[in-house]
Image 1 (spheres, rainbow, N blue to C red):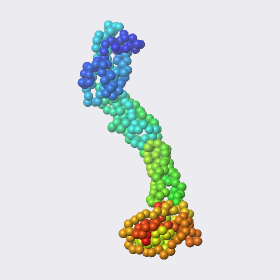
Image 2 (image 1 turned 180 degrees about the vertical axis):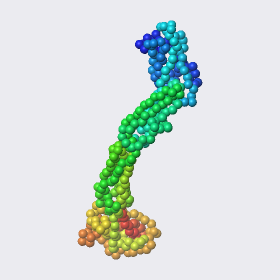
Image 3 (image 1 turned 45 degrees about the vertical axis):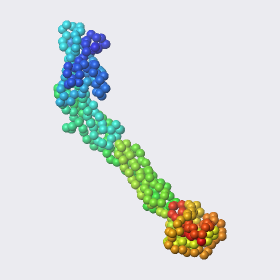
Image 4 (image 1 turned 90 degrees about the vertical axis):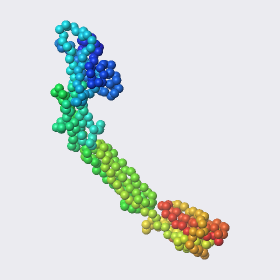
Length: 362
């Protein structure tokens, strides 16, 4: 039923039908739900009667968008027209061209720099759909704020419609970014400086964020990275690389022999003084907190290259200490009993460096 201007049914009666619709069906009102399920947008059109003062509107009738090469189609009214005046003429259909402007990103600022035009028509089809000053439906924009794009659609009947998208902000330039402070190219383990901070700016869309990541305090190569993002999504990064240096270990000193693969022979149950020094660059470390661990491990006696008897043994306690008189750490190790067994003794400092000596029990 076609509803009249004031809610009456005095205009026309009967179903609105599409005679052909390019093979998409005949009954427009019955097809509306199916068309909507296929993703077809509803369009607004008017039915204008020939006699004066009567105009009807159908606001929710879904129809297919027609491409330029597609066939055009007309609308007709089925059933008997209930006209208030016997002199009323035939009903005609007036269909409008629709232009919708779209942007590449739904952001206050965009980094792509293009404005797109979408055109749709429910009648004779679209002949052309152009962005202003262009020969296509896209317009490339330069950087700047508050730009606009106007699109013009022309159908095959010569009707035109325009629409303008304004407030388009384009920023294609990445922000500037640097790291302030942080470690120098290298430093010794344990002397960790404060982490660097991010210094970033953006002249167009403004800075959205700047995040510092990475870093590390273990011995080896590390890097901090500052990543800056502006409000258009452009990204820039700055990197600070540095190295954490290992400590220098000296020892074990006499009576232990550190010759490569040499076995230090010692009587089972005796105590061996393990003497050593630790340096961070030119600075000698004297706190026992610099020592991570001492470990002795049974090993195969066939792996060494020779034997060296230990002549001086200690009878003191086994607690690690720093001897300020001798200027060295001392760890007394009471050897296990059992002649013919072999052990490795390893001291590991807090930075992960280590020294190892080999012992054979006699």
